Length: 297
Ligand code: NAD
Image (cartoon, rainbow, N blue to C red):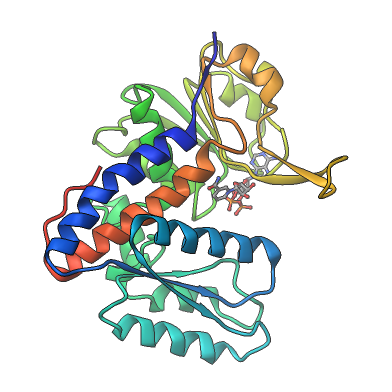
């Protein structure tokens, strides 16, 4: 029987546990603050940001939202980041990606104060993660580690295949898997768009993390019997629904579940975990900046 890995349930558990940490901060007179910055009219980005703000409100994090006209000069975004870096009530800063054309993405990533960089994308934080001394683990791969932990999936000695090498999912996921620490110690292969024979790799994997952004590209035939399959993909495909589309993952769920031992659904798998880990990083940031010892779930 294939186990369904329920991201909504694990995320809810983490959010509940985070309440204790938020109370500890409140006792010390600290309310964690997360600033989201949106400089885009892209509907998906707008949805992501509003969900993050709603999450903050629900757990007692102060949400600060800054919206910048997408045609404004890039300097307006750089100045906003400087202001938020200097604001003591703001402990975490998230600039919603992708950024618009006129903005230099690398400059944005470098200019967020590394101590407020709750996405974990600043080069200093990327370096610390690789060196095994992470300050903030990027939310999606960190959430995947938590899913594996909650479902008792052993990574030590396991063959893990990460499909995708993006800076936000694939690379940090692989870096976490190879760390000499709990939820690491996996023998890790990174596959990408130039991989010659993807199936040859995925068929050997005890754990597959699919983050390619290609609808349903991994099916049951490409998996090893009993593998744990983590589907990061969120892809819109045309469908006969009210909205005219539906969301599917990078894994063909119906066929994969015949072979997999455990699998995440889309939606309701990795997505809610990404959101929960942003709250986690914000609470961690607030504790560190205010010198309050907080226990984290
Ligand atoms: P990206 O486009 O930056 O990177 C995709 C990666 O996949 C690239 O490294 C590319 O080399 C690889 N790739 C593309 N086609 C491939 C193929 N045919 N075979 C093997 N590898 C291939 O994407 P991303 O930002 O990492 O996101 C990946 C997917 O995950 C997207 O669908 C995105 O919407 C989704 N996503 C979900 C969450 C979440 O919380 N659930 C978070 C981030 C991204």
